[in-house]
Structure formats: structure tokens, C-alpha cells
Length: 452
Image 1 (cartoon, rainbow, N blue to C red):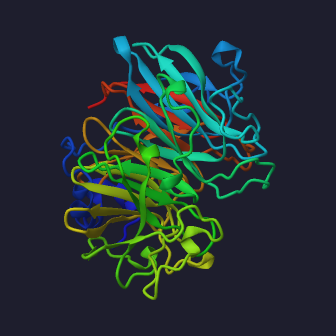
Image 2: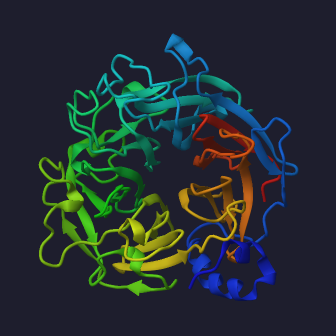
């Protein structure tokens, strides 16, 4: 069942929408802090500085903008701020690790640094910000360079960041000297501890995000392929599960999810739809030496695809992953404005938890979900990557969608405004600050206020 963004935002007035979403939304918070079900923090107040609109009582600090100087005379802060995570440091400090989704023609590439560069012709990578207890920037420096199209990723239970390349370009393409399409591990506190080593066993494909089962160490991976056949949902069985920094270099087995009888997840439209007996099929060639993985032969029963597989997180005893949208005109089995799926490894069960849409007003939040994170007080924060105004929006256990932030940086014209997407939403270890990126112009914000 679907409901529009306007219906959900109407809250108690939309009785049908409330009933439709209550059961589905409650599943998103299993094993997490209880979501109180509050209806958000009120309307967004226009920012007189034209950067970030927030509810009354909340404040932001600009931590970093593209073009700012990096520490240690490394150059300038790169463009295209994307996925990000926050880690606890010593003496109350916080380490942010931030992706830069730079292609070969990037406005401001990630500077190459000796010992931290994979391919000197790659323009992407990560930067690391160290913050004091008041969100003042102590330093910001290159954490990994020479990678390409670093889109999202995810944190590890041992406190490092896995940055994902959303490309399959080989050496010789776009000037690259090495193959791309890998995951790299990044230590935000000490980048030289991890260096620039591709985790090749985790597959070479258009990576998006990852989530790790903290009990088994299994890594789940999403693929955001741009053309049909669309991406797959993977799991990686490491040879050294939960082995700490560097352990994923030891190798393991990459598998792809098969939902029996379901070739395309977009064809499933009813929230609560459940599939038992999920199968995991070994990937024939994880390095995609001749053929992209999604095009490889998985046997007569095929494999399950989905368009725009993006955000991924672990909650309770399940992994959740997002399909931002599906368009039949582009080859999907059906249309939707966003799905959230839940996979329970212990039961080998897949459930469609949320379906967003149809779109009714692009000025309101709630379509094309992308990066996603659990808020410390319960609920979710989701970065929107759709048409019109761009928001960070919250989801409560009662099924309410509320605006938390709106990008006020108009990169278009007064007559035809455009706003860059949000990305990398994350919370400080103490839960008192929400960090989030504006993709373009690349800006990293710290948001504080009366969090419940």
C-alpha cells in the first residue's frame, strides 16, 4: 500500500495513511531506542544567510566548504561531499570521515598524498575532520586519495569507515591507471594505518553502501547500477569476521541475493510483503574481469535485481536497505518513489517495510530516500535525493514524516531554482550533534538544538 508525502505529513488528519504506515514503520526501529512518535520539531525557519533552514531552536555551524584550505598545506577541500560517519576520538573529540564523489572531471579533486593514494589519476577519496568538544575544526586532511566516485559506504564495528567506489571503470578509462569499483577501509584518526588498499574480495562493481552484522561480521553491500539490468544486493562472508582494522584484506566469499520467483524488487508494491527462503548465490567472478557481476550467469533461475539500491544500515537483528526509486520507463518492473527492505538473516526472510509515493508536492519532504541513519533518541534521519527542494527528513515509529532541514543554497536561478542533495547524515557519539553534507556546493554542517 502506498501513501503520498502530503498524506503522511498531514499526521493525524490522514487516518488512512496513519493506519497504513503504523505497522510498517514500527519494524524500522526493532532493537533500537524507542521512537517516541513525536511529530517533529515544527516548521522550518528560513535561514537569513541562505544556507540551511532548520526548526526554531536549532542552530548550525559550517564546518567545512569546498575550496577551503586543508591542514598541513595539502591543498583545498575537495568538491562533491557525499557519505560520512562520525567516530569518537580521545578527550571528547570527534572524527568525521567524509566521501568525495569525484569523477575524472571533478571541480576540486582530492589532493594526492604519498602513502594514501591508490591511483594518482583518481580524483575521488575521503577527507577526515577532527573536531573538539564544541565542534570546532582542529584539523581536516586527506584520508585516502586516488579513488573514484566515492559515494557512500558505512562504519565498521571497530571504528573505521568503508568507502565505496560507485564505478566500474577500468585502467585506461578516463585516464585511470588502475581498475576501480572497490571498497577501501579508512581510519579517520590515523589514515596511514589503513593506507589505500582495495578490498578486492568484496567485489568490483558500482558500490553504494554497506552495513555489517555485529554478531557474525557479515558485510551487506548495495549496488547502484545506472542501466538495466539494475544492481544486486550482496553479502560478503569474510575469512576473518570481526577481526578489526585490516582484517577484510584477508579475503572471503561474495554472494548475491536471490528472492525465489522475484526477478525485480520494484514489482513488489504491498508493504508487509514477505519472502521466506531467501537464497545467497556465489558470485561467479567477483572481480568482473570480463563481465559486470549483475550481467553474469547465475544459473537458470537467475538473480534478483533492483533499481537505485542505495542506503543500508543494521538495526536490531536485521539489515535494512533502500531503493531510492524505480521507473518503468527506464526498465524497472514497476514505478515507486522509494522502498525500504528488511532482511532477517536468522530467518532468511525479506520484508518490504516501506513504499513511498506517489509524489504530490516536490516542496515537501518524503520521496527518493538515499543516505539513512538511526537517530540516538529513536527514529530515522533520511537524506532526500529527488526533485525540487532537498531535505533531511525524519521518520517516527507512528509513521510520520517531518522536515528536519532544508537546503537553502540555490545553485540555479530565481526563476528556475535548483538545490543540491543532502548526504552523509550522522550523529556525534554523544547524540548531541547531527552532521550532514550538502553535496553541492560541498558543505559540511553541524546541527545542534533541543533534540528529544
